[in-house]
Length: 205
Image 1 (tube, rainbow, N blue to C red):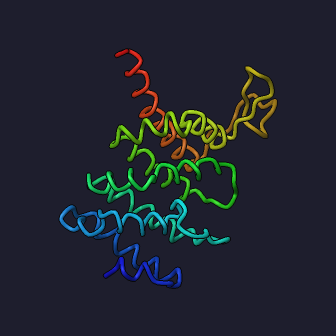
Image 2 (cartoon, one colour):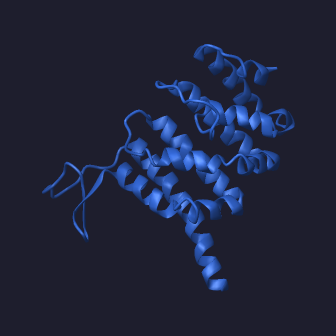
């Protein structure tokens, strides 16, 4: 019933209420089945703004709706193998990688960026095929390195010289903010998933 409402053209406040309900229900593994189907995942992925070829993205997306949909996806993917399979089939990682490319765009706030990264970490930790797709097809290491640079506010004065943007000549840099630290940790966790698998495969060969 809740998913049916999300298929209608509702106001963002109504969408948010539906998604909050799904997020609460998705914490209970016994309630997961209706939300772990391919169709349900497609609806949630669309509301998270990560759908591939599913209509035009609104010019001014509702960030609260996007964040709530991302939280739902994190819960469901973490708790359900069926949802993990559906996410892989629906190319969720492609949508996540596309948004990762926008790491310097001001339209995305901390919560959207953080839960994008958390969802990427979960799906790459739980699905070897998705991990490989991100690493090879989507050039994941390069994408994540760029996202880490943007998060840390790094600049490159010279080829082998790195600095924090806006702090040239400072003898002591201020500590990184809490939000930036949280995102940097998620990026490093994803990089571990991707590079650990690649390095292990290299050793096996």
